[in-house]
Length: 88
Image (cartoon, rainbow, N blue to C red; front, side, top):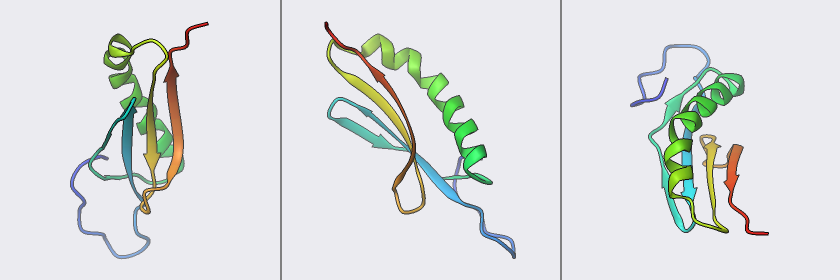
């Protein structure tokens, strides 16, 4: 579930992830999401990507790329999805 971090119950901490989108030189990072594991994180990432990709594709210029990354708690990429526009 994405949103403000809640207090952790006793036991194992829930992994925290965030999303970073990049369109050319522009980059932004989302709020943190608590997700059970990388399987849940992949499912959430594909949902978020699906919500964003239409708008990103309509604004994509020739020879440019758009991408979304799922970042772990140390802000290292776990998954990446890219949309690339190439001129042949």
